[in-house]
Length: 284
Image (cartoon, rainbow, N blue to C red; front, side):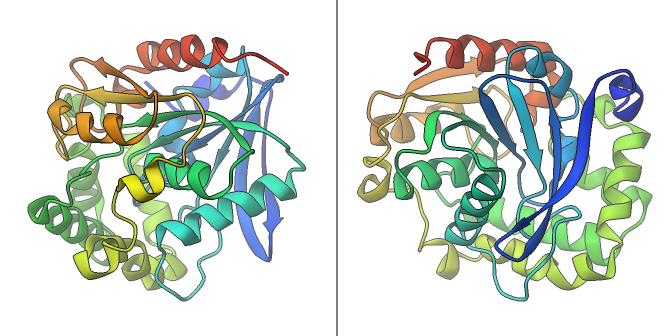
């Protein structure tokens, strides 16, 4: 249960691209059709570390630190879903990609859906992994905001561990290596300044500009799979149903015995979900 040791014998690249002036961290492995993986609020590339090996046998896997996250640059303004979506577009352009598969976890799922609706013709298919709190529940926003800010501004082993444990059904899945990786990211001076921009979406006045709604979800015209779990702390399986109804033709699958990070807790099962779903899409 390690990150970099497990990747040690895998051929991969860890590099930076200029995404319309934003220095952006990228990890890439494998060949074939490009698959971009997006993390959640407060996340970073390492959130998908357990998926890279398995998925890279089928796709050109591209993990990024999203706008303001990880080691990507952190502009001084609140980060809305449109900001993340624009940054994703600029990364795709910087990599000279025409079409991509997209899988996003939590915030990343929200961004992937928004991107497909607002930048048609680029995403070939979507897997929205625990996009979470689709009903804008105040208690979930409060918990996420407070725990994220505390983990960053009062960064120590226990606070970062607590933030990570909130994501997991099986708390033992939070390893020392994962805590250390996140601690180093959170203690960057630039991150401590940017954290309030990162949690801006946890304030309802700002969030409501991007809330899940048929007005934009109905514009998603590519195959879409909602990958939910039975122990997601942000939303129940029943709360996936309205999103499924909003996105035309979308499908729903449930990964059992996992929390908000099924790609980490149930890596092999999650990888199979991705591979099976995207493999059904005809290659042009």
